[in-house]
Image (cartoon, rainbow over all chains, first blue to last red; front, side, top):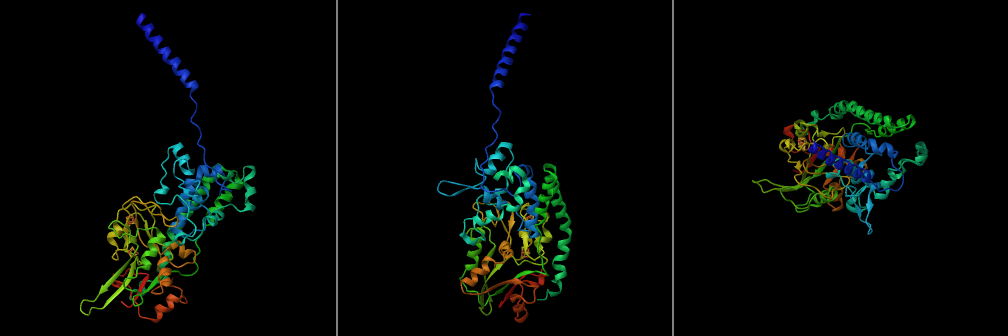
Length: 159
Length: 259
Ligand code: SF4
Ligand code: SF4
């Protein structure tokens, strides 16, 4: 009888400690995603949920059906969302803390795109690329006339 | 040119275009439908329209090809090879595990000593063995005749490396860094000359052709073989040219003069 009471006491102490720990434990912080200038091609809420499907269907279009004029291009994503060091060097978007890596680390989804694709935009004028970075960014912005369609939040709030 | 009858415009795109088209629409509908779940009705339509705008713009029969004048090609010059490597982010080092999209070849007639030097790359065959053997559909021929590896589908089986009689395919066996944004490439996939497809779509010459012109040799010519008015088609109709190993019946899109 006494032994049982002892076990009960120990268990309730453990339970109490657990409750105290749980009360002090803060939820995992939401990732802080670096913001890009300008407007995204679709609202942030849509991009958050569908960017993988968009990229997947558009990659068929681009690689197999010659449809490079679509605005949903990975190169466009990279051109807008790349951050630069103080000295102006582009930081790969899949580097820790950068645009792609931040969310993908948070949700624990492996990011495979940049095993093949460049994670920094083209350096203007280097190796005879077709367009400078500015031109690529401009090409993927939503036309001014269409921006109002996304309501007060703007077209994705530039995320 | 004995492959002429196998290389008609009707065989060149039509059948290839039809099948995947409906598949593609299905994919697009899927993307649209997913957007529909997350959006107000007005915005849904907009999102889908944006995707569908990306249509390819074939006007008339197109088959891109090259004409290489081996008489004008200089022994020892590798301007085209360098230009390809620089533009597409390939290594200059000719090591055994480095990809090679274009290379200079020297042939010698042993009896007479006659020697020619010229570039070889993917011949962008109308009936390429690479397309035939590929188990995943990754090796494919675009409606405009350019043969590519869809690296999203490639499983790295290397059948195409074995099958291609022109040794035009390479396998990427190591992690690749510093890719060009326009030339994604990575470990575990096969690759070959893309005819600089994104330059061609933008109305520019492939990097090798541009470099050859810049070097002043003008040994390479690029254009639409199916447009009778294009400079390359006119030249092909005027002078004697050949395709390499035409006997294999794969109808290469790269023609040679003077070999
Ligand atoms: S040259 Fe080789 S890789 Fe190129 S299309 Fe012909 S068979 Fe395929
Ligand atoms: S290596 Fe890739 S492209 Fe070549 S046959 Fe295999 S799956 Fe097809």
